[in-house]
Length: 231
Image (cartoon, rainbow, N blue to C red):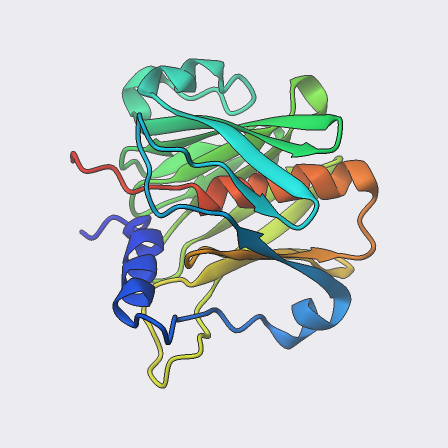
């Protein structure tokens, strides 16, 4: 079965093949209407041990990126077993003097995974989980499900939010793979992210400053995802 999280890498590769006519995600109208949009700048396509993966997106600076399976040991909020982890990475999102630590882990195939007090989310393949912040106030996001339509849940400031893939792009054809993701609450759109390089974020104007940083950190984690080469 195709690993669902390859959708992030395949969509980015398709964008690269289009050269100057770069493939871009078309944001859902309600997201665009109710959000501020931020474009990533100074972002390299390189990743790995010796790559500088830092970049700026709007008022945020993403940096201190570390890719190491041992990073998973710090994912205390998501509480993954080491044997479940395929790859993991850590990073920081800063807005001025305010810094939010982020960590993500890609998991091996299993039928379901725990969302703690939220229960369990079923999956047909591997999953991706991210946490931003520390302790009980940390925000979390987990994705899984069908390869062509990954979805999941996020928890921010005590709110449970829905996460769904976005497939509309500027291409004449409709890509099977996700070009990005959107996050929605009971009141409407909360945020969205374009995972195509260089990437963009949409953040609801209703978010409080602390919530906005946590959501931006989770979205940065999706932007930094790199499909593991080993199966």
